[in-house]
Length: 309
Image (cartoon, rainbow, N blue to C red; front, side, top):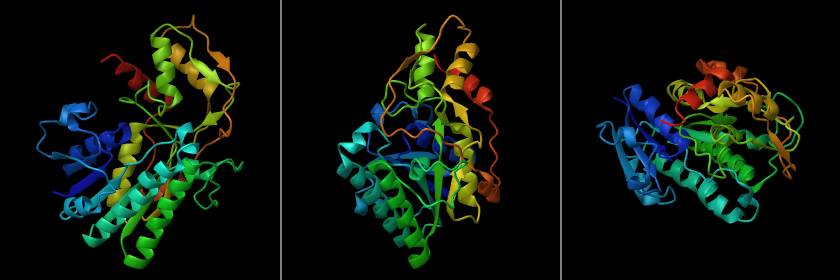
């Protein structure tokens, strides 16, 4: 039985990674800075003997050294996700995302870990207008958050080249699915739209709704992450669907699937520095067998089905 550590494993995406690993007979240690009694995403695994839980910060190098001593793979998902707050508090983002990644890599190197899988972000591409986004593009980060992800990727590259630690950086596009908290400012538009429609209210679209994103279902993200880990692949890979969807289309599809055709979106002013269009070129990820299994409609149906459960 292989063993994996998942930093940030109590979060929305991290918890789905834990599910995927346990489903594939991994022993998993979850490392998260939240106390386990406050965790809802892992409630279904509390009594599963394949999972253990450590409350800790990834910046605690001594503890990381201890926890990685018998680990084959590290899935590094601990980070502060993008919010507008990153412009006001860039140092906190550096501490959590850049320095935290450095500690994880150091501990993984010292313990002979087979591979580190970094959760990176499509934010590294910034507002560079060329579509689709390809891994060969030079990053143009437009926020402190995006800079921390570029920095983390560069640390991974250095540790592979200098210390022979296998690293793989997955640039996730817009992830959605069950367990995503609509009340968090970190949540994407999808859970926010679903909650509004579920309450019989109009979803709010900032701007004119023509902004596009590559929305990828969290189940596909979890599967891609495991495929990437156990493959020989290293370097940088996009994980998305390769399909560009506007916010207007997202809202209309959710309204239709929830049977609330009496509801119409409302529009408010746009957000400064927001990326206008984004879609991934996912052809490189075919190197390790990744193809998205969920269409947008299938993913939305599955998300809506679990909404009130």
